[in-house]
Image (cartoon, rainbow over all chains, first blue to last red; front, top):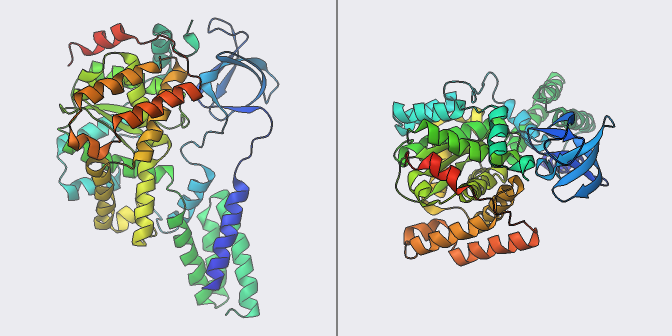
Length: 167
Length: 293
């Protein structure tokens, strides 16, 4: 069994080495999408559209806004609620993807369909075994499929003077 | 002990497995297994195969599997709490508040969905992969949008910190189960049911560790504040709950006492320098909820 222990030690080292390290004043876009603007209000023109995980170099901070420079060299202001100091791990960070990769060896041909209409095969099977009614299955199915457009969320924030629309 | 050629082949296997890990590609693990088998070393092939299963069990649960687990737990939450309250406008409003808060949480790139449970008790639950529930009773207790935002922020905190997945991961390790999620569920549906039922029992009956609840209280107030809601609204809400739940033993079985929660929230507001913005949006909350509740 020694080689199994050696293997585990190598994997632990590898996983440690994969951990991201942030250097200097770097922020990451934490919102699904965010606008970089020429000034510190939501009324200022958009100079770049950003997405989750984009790295930004901090130029200066001013209350709830941060002046940053993108990887492409564009400088502008972003609402501080849209950035975080750590890179978003997201749906699957490297470590979880690694675990999935290995588990997948045992799971050939198995796919999940969460996000589409219809319950996952495994959830459906669970529902059968647990005696979940069709009405409750439909409720979770509708909940899974429920989407709200980004524009609607932005309009909601704007109407409430929230987020970057705060006065 | 391995002989020299086996050791060499094992080293090659390790390199291949390391590459497999970095690329997330299990095919390379298969290749290493095949190479060992091809050289006539069945024992080494089995070791490489077994290592994959073992590592898969110890590493965190991936998002695809998290969705399966979350959906199965959500089914049970809906079944146990009287089904979903069928009020499309109110449900959309709760989703708008929740998704606004989720936009600025520390795990903003997954889908969060919110539903109202048709139940009079005052409670809220979060299942993995962003399945979040509030009861009709809780909505009746909330007085403004800032309070709701912090409550939903608390539940989003459970998802960002993967609290339920942590419980499943630990129970799996204790039970010596190497797999879960898709492969596990399809090959061992009864065992998968046990995993889900165990998680549901923890979520609905026993409650999460107090440390996890307090961590989510802190996160809830931080996430809501990032959007611009007044963080002190959560203090007011918890204080109201303390009055309402003063002698409710069932509630305290699943939650830390209110003095600890209030103290966690107050220290977070002070340490994080969260601004009292005065944004409560009581009118918008009343307009959206009054007729529907």
